[in-house]
Length: 431
Ligand SMILES: [Zn+2]
Ligand SMILES: [Zn+2]
Image 1 (tube, protein in one colour):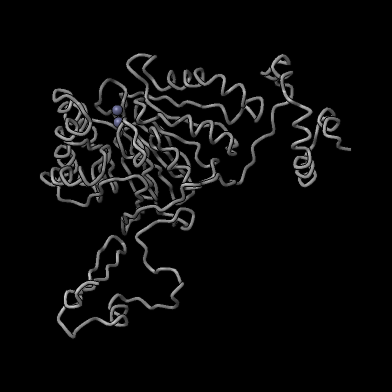
Image 2: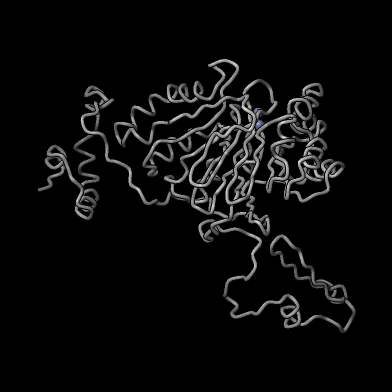
């Protein structure tokens, strides 16, 4: 037990990004009563088992967006080296009209996206900032996983061209499909080929503030980023008079300074300090300083960018965010920027309206399943040739397995009135 004389009680409410602290004196004989505490907090306790009135968390699937609201979910905030607690770059933008846009889909991010339990039907638009795998390495999880989990249509991927054809997004996606040919051909036979296809929308990486998307009240523009080679871009998204900017990876540049100006939420990379990259990431000093501040953006450089573009709210990502690193990074950012700031972590969520920008943490399950949308996948394509030969199928332990699973299968078929081929009917003794 703590010494009663030292007992202070504070109630902290976090609402609309405002922190209100209520502190009760710790004078002896002046202990706060529970009633007083609740009154001071403005809470009216209806029931001990009722919902908490103000929550500093977002439970996916429980909040309808207002028409003129945008919700941004960070589904990846880290670095190319994988870690269980932090995926690589991915930001989901959900607009009040129901449209959902993914900005990058970096290594490991798909598990976070899936934990939001959004029907895959609505997760079909991906905008890639560049082709480093920490920005698109989990496309396979959305492509194949979403295909098996009910996405009815093709994936749509937008991304920049490159200095040559082989350095562009179209080349990358065409070869992604080629590399995954076995996956594609086998699923295309078993399920339906359509959701396994990807439409690529490649645009000029040199385009300055060019419109790359304009549909249903959402306009997305692209402008060049400066990072590692020709090709990377930054995006702005405008909806309902709000503007979200996603920088991708970039050294601070004139285009960002111009086109991110005065945006509502500005998401820009912020690398660890050179010392952190040397000490924790095992990079030699000559690589560490360049990775932090020559082809990326260091913490003080991030702050400088934000001071120049003056967003309503700034978001720093692309660093391992933990006790050992975040204070130094924050301190370095604050040498050049004193405005509103989030140090992004996976599952951090921002609700953006004209009136407020609220940062919260999303709380979601580790054991998510897919949920149905409004449209159904088409059935398997008739006449498509099987990609398995009889020579391999001849090895199936048919008799034993018919006996083992026959009861379960017959019940299932009956319950859902599943159409069966004459061969299956005969093998399982179904009338
Ligand atoms: Zn990169
Ligand atoms: Zn990156």
